[in-house]
Length: 341
Image (tube, rainbow, N blue to C red; front, side):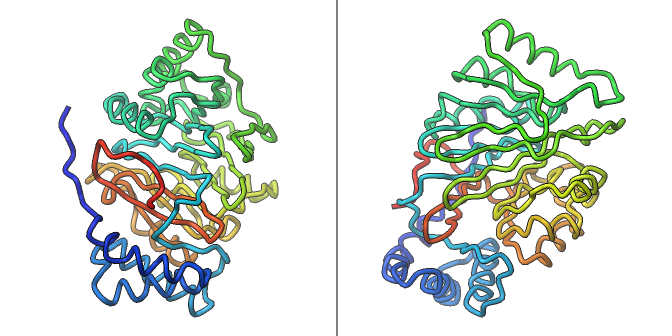
């Protein structure tokens, strides 16, 4: 397996660590000020860093629409996080809360080794819940590997009866593996709740009847102290419209860009209901679909959200702390996945 080259951010961390620790006691304003000073002293040299500084300026100017703090620095007090795992053109999102874990989707079959390596480094050998949003191979391709590698308490499945297309072969194999291992599965329905540590995962949408399998995607929201996260799989505009019509509780600080950042999803109306402070797109470098689409990126920016993408930044981890969200990105392998000290 080819090793990915490390994109080091240690230089920035070393230079700014003392600054953040000094200003952290000032609260949100101090952390935002640290970002601005770091950026304009040349300490934040990457494009994500410049975006982070712009967000900090908005926070200082009182222009943030969400009220959530977005910062980069010390996350050692975090008890919860959302890991957007770089699995190429696919999805794999790990929710961590108080030492318990939930994995939403499992990437492609080709990404299996990288995914399992990440779960091992994160200490996620035991999953309280594995959520498979819909049967496309870029979301469930390594689900069998995960089931065989980890202790999985339960699997939350999409309602395949809503798909007007033939049931996927990949999903059939996943269900066979579940049966052979004795892992129980349940079809997701709106209103179901699942405890993860001190947080709760809620099914806020269970898809619609459609010939587009993306639109049977489960939509889930996770709520915990200092953390709220929404994942809509590959659900597109028709699903977003139904959720808005039904008055679903979509509000979340952290949002996984729907369908890898497609312009066929992530509508302005939907984002207005979510009001995210952070949006992360899971996508492959130079993918054939052009994800994330520029139209969607512009909508994220118009909504006032800070935007990250796994194709350029690698694994993106959003740590939740009492002071706000701390974002870390890494293009490396072999490091421990602990909050920055």
